[in-house]
Length: 88
Image (cartoon, rainbow, N blue to C red; front, side, top):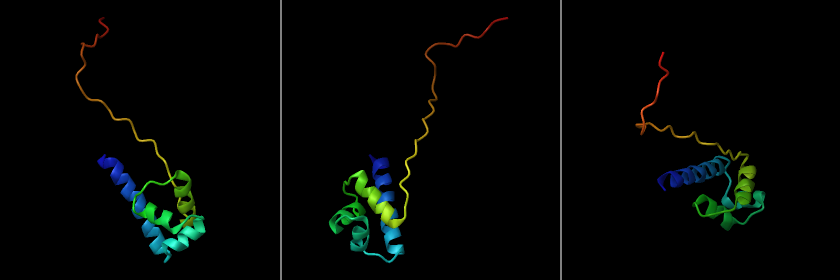
């Protein structure tokens, strides 16, 4: 759960920082993204939104939404059976 909250917080902060860097209000971005100011507020406070709405906001701010496949975790442990080696 912590990892999910951390990722959400990073998205929220990136959107809010970019908006503030551009000197724009939530209403300004909402109008540019064709969403309501209330929707914009919800995004910045981490409430659920649709992917479509998030993409609209990112586009309005000149941001790209990037999805990365996370690397598989490597298992380190003890095998249950001994490995057989070729004998010569």
